Amino acid sequence: MSTQAQTLEEVPGSRGAEGLSVDERLAKFSRDLEHLNAESKSWVKTWGVYLGILGALIAVPKSALDLVTQLWVRPDTSVTIKNVKITHAPGLSSEIVEFPLVVMNLGNRDDAFLGRGATLTAPGGSVELSEDDFGLYDNGKKIETPLLVPKDAVRAYVVSITFSSKTRELAATPGQHTLEMRFPGVNQSYAARLCFPLQQSDVDVLFKSDQLETEYFLTQCPGGARGGS
Amino acid sequence: MKQGTASAFLSSVVGALCFAVLGAYGQAYRPPIEAKPGYAATGAVVQQDVRTLILNTTPCDDQEKQIVIFRTPFGTKSANPIVCPSGKTLQQVTANQG
Image 1: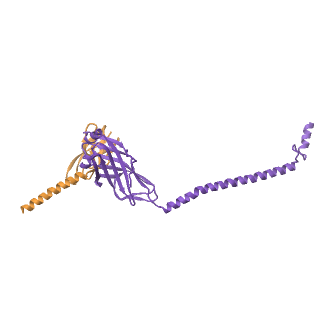
Image 2 (image 1 turned 90 degrees about the vertical axis):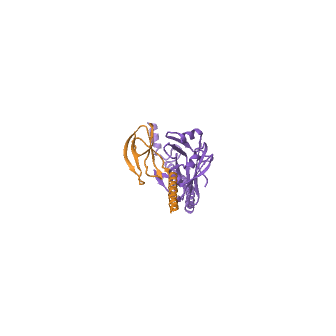
């Protein structure tokens, strides 16, 4: 009881356990609070500066890039071939060579193919394919050149090649075959290469069989499928 | 007179031959269609055996031909013949991929 009375007397009293009065402790608490508040403001300021610098680091190159993009308008077109399918049927006058052609323009200006050409090279020599020998198809619809290649777009077409008697003779030679597709553009020419080896057994199946035959080949061009311009 | 007739005849024969040769070289094939189950097409038979049927669905087009390939199982029934602009009549069948 006496201990309780002492405590009750001491708490409202002017001195605490550390020898400070309540008023002093309040003043100290107030000072601490102000200090913390100032520190907090300083922290916000510091991180605000950091965030500002970070924002500038992102914004400045982006603005520069936008400026370059606005000043340097150009197409960035490429054509790619990955695989080929050859179909042979004894009733047809030619084998049918077909493959997907991926046309990509990642630039900021539209481009156009003004024409098309192709060369088949086999161990026996090389032959230029005429425009009648091959067609470009988009969902079964034949596409003619000039062909618009829109900016920021990827399109997949199907190319179908039919051999003339001379081309067929060359194609039916065992060995490495290279087909180069060329598309003259507005400022430069684009090319894609398709390389596949034909063994004697492939030739026998694809050019001499008395049944329907289909074979697939992946392009194996040394140095990649993209040709020079 | 005889010489004129002979040269005219020769010219027409050479012209016809050139046309035929050019026609043969100008014949291109569109990408073949592999018939999927339920697919049906009508055309002239290019080749048929127990396993496959190949139809030319554009038999009157000498420039560009569309080939459709059916593989077993498929069904066939005869269709009306087609008369081409050249006057040639071609037999046709309708095939269904099973």
